Image 1 (cartoon, rainbow, N blue to C red):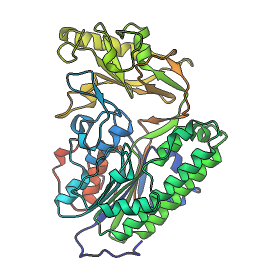
Image 2: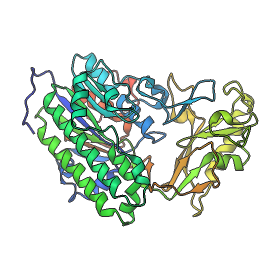
Image 3: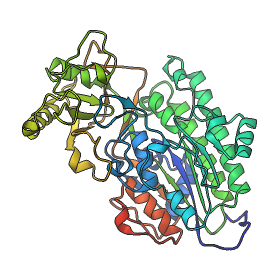
Length: 447
């Protein structure tokens, strides 16, 4: 490190954070000889597996990672959330995140942040030095601020995300090529602005790792057809992280983290189909496609990933469960979920947690009543169109896990013990010598 000096005076230590979406720590730690740059950070600093959040879904994870608080405070519980007092649903965007992002805390201290490709940040904020929003952004043109950033990104053919539809093909060659091209453009942009901008916090996310894991992870774990291509992709990720590390000045601490772990996928579990078969859910007609099509007599329904809601009187528009029976009905549903087994005889649920145990805050009015954390191999789906089977197999062979997320910090004073996603934001602030009220976070500093 130390190749580039900062443009202005020394205003305190800095942090460069690089997200590697969905990368399990065990993948990296088990192949230190393959991923020597990350191994060097572990040797010279600190590294370990950490826990994700409930539920371990990227749309919920990144708001929590970047704020240090749970979905009850961020107001984002998953890729699809439910409107208060309605059966209408929506896809949460950056403006739906109700808690304070770590880069906003940096800017409030009159220090500067460059933020690139973080999921659930569209539309880009105009009160930070530079931002290109990530996952869910419609285009580079609309995702970039200021205009000069847009012009630069369009000039290098920057991509918000990989073309995941290519992963559905039996022949993964085109998907793998697209993943490498997307990764390369992300690296090129990160490298450019690490050197171009005078930043105190650089916060960039590689999301292509999550996409590759979804379609190739079983090949890696079970020595499948594309195992070598999978490892080669991660060699490239490690090489890029090593090059970025070399660009950082001596006053910069490098952090690398994922938002959840990953494991092989054996079965997709269509939970609304299961609820319908077990008598918990019914529809007004055969052509049902969305939550609003459920019938009045419905007792419970599910949203991804593994979130369950009772059709509660006074909360849902056509609630059928009296408030006086809420605890009894929820306990019955929880017990049935805990007994649910897959075709292989293994339990689907590792555990089932209540909403009040998982979520707390000013925005818990749309919190689920129960959340299933699945055992490895069971990918929890919702679906209101109706599936012929409860258990099925789709084009993906990898799925998210609550455990085995990743954290590397290029600082030996950091102790990563019993850590989780909520600890990252306060750790960044501590590394930057920025004071904060510890009661504002669900996590703690690891410094």
